[in-house]
Image 1 (cartoon, protein in one colour):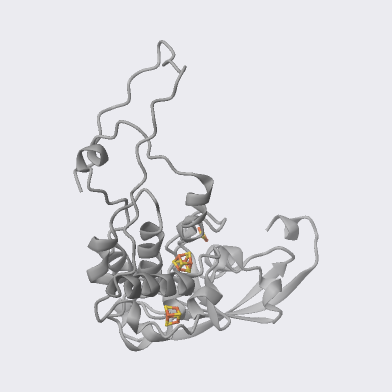
Image 2 (image 1 turned 90 degrees about the vertical axis):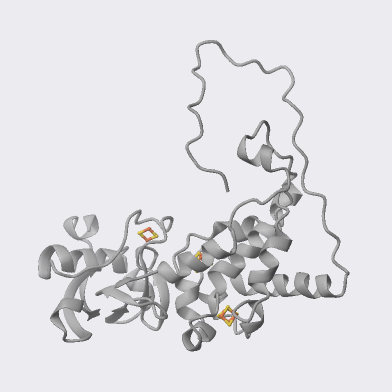
Length: 282
Ligand code: SF4
Ligand code: SF4
Ligand code: FES
């Protein structure tokens, strides 16, 4: 917006936005807005312009405006994208079409209900699982992990739960039971973590009829992921581990041990103790 105020070139772009208000019973419709666009403006900037200057009733979800919070996933000119990370200029057109993310119910206008993804994500137990439960619940030290160990999963840990992959997945479009690329890639993210020992606990969920075997490896999820997670690759790795398990070729890795206490480091005087944990047990 600052560019426009400083006199940078401005062109008018048509924003064709899908609108939906459950209380009016009119179903969804497309409304056009004429938005002045300067270099560097994102689609989210355009939607903010609409809300602030043209139609205050337009709803969307956004927070960080920097591709981190995962709130602003929406369908923009043919594919799911983050509105805050998509510059209008990069679309190369005078018409920007905006709809809510496909494959989710719509709450209002551009706001999808991501609850189904969150529930499926919860179902794969997206946290470290270990047999040393006492240590997990009352940690006394860090688990050791080398940079090479971290490389095995870190790409998959970049997921911001934006739902773009879910909105692009053709299998999910025809089968809402399918877990989908976001939860399944996170199953691999934890299975591949040397601190985790939860493969057995997740196996039943990911190998069930709604799990990885429904994936056709079309790769749309990886095409649209704004964080380079590559969920399609993660899903193929889950499949491979399941096959190794059935063939009894999978070696159960020894989970990473606790790190030895740091030598020569004393707690500085005057630093208060941390508060007691508030989270319940797993
Ligand atoms: S895998 Fe990528 S597209 Fe899917 S929710 Fe995570 S960040 Fe978004
Ligand atoms: S690779 Fe699998 S999860 Fe990804 S879009 Fe295709 S079917 Fe969906
Ligand atoms: S507003 Fe946070 S990712 Fe777009």
